[in-house]
Length: 419
Image (cartoon, rainbow, N blue to C red; front, side, top):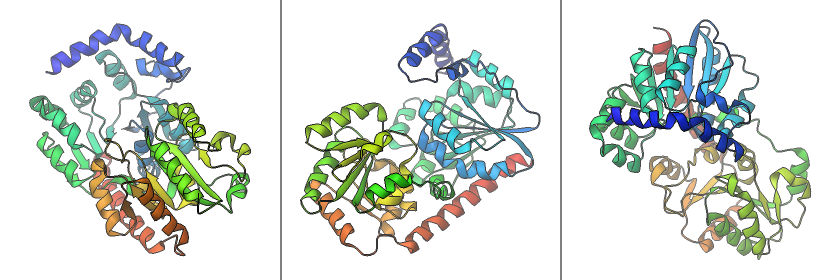
């Protein structure tokens, strides 16, 4: 099976440069650094122990910030190489880590043997850590062949992904069996990893519970805060197609009761932003982009967030959050970030990707399922009328839970650093 996968990647090899140039033209790749995906590396490797951490998306990138903060202080570690795939994840992480002198960011090269070998030869990592569900067969095979310790941290295997891997179960066992350690993000993922052939599997909980320190300093600009300080505010975050309109209609219901209501909509994918803006205007709503918030005034209905990596700023001021991906057959979005910031969370019926996390939050009384616009509006009205908008006791429980997770994860990682 691996032979044929490898063969297909070799077929892609002559097309890789053209493919990247096309994506660059569409604005989906970095204008200069896109060549890093072809293993054209311009940064020299420093001497000493190098930890390499790879992730894919913005959310995964933010989840590793506590790890990087601790690893940075370890005198045995001289460099921390982080790799990602998407342009947005690169932008967010570079903003967060611009002052960290140990950290180097690169785009992960395509999973083609020529590129992978060049990448690993150049960086020669002493420890490799993959985050979440990043499985690249050629990369895993070559890393293992070079006897570089390979860890999967916050491993998340959804039921859908598990069933796909089961179709090539023998191949899956060869790939997952090459990890020296797998720390699962949930009990479900722990079981899936074991069934897929991972040998050393442990479960301490989801690492995203541990990123509190990096969000406490995320504040909106004072000029914007002054404009909205007397508004009733709620947030509709990580929305997918149709969920923005659902949120807008909830806004229209709330507006009958609160003339000063402000709804903040944060789409999951901002490449849809212009289409969303037009649809909101069709509902006769007054909309302002976040990047053009100087136009926001007391008549603005919707603040439409057209940037990545700033959701915590809005969670900090709204305290009532509807999380998208839950009204459609997507499986929901991760509710940990708003929960850590003391928000009451509302979601649709489709949350299969985060069932265990939602169960935990429901046990704390901070998550509620909604089935329609009227139900969401009713919940929000109750929240606006509540005198206790911030439950410090619940936030403290979540913080303590996250601290325990990061401490256990670091104990496991340090075994491979101190060997």
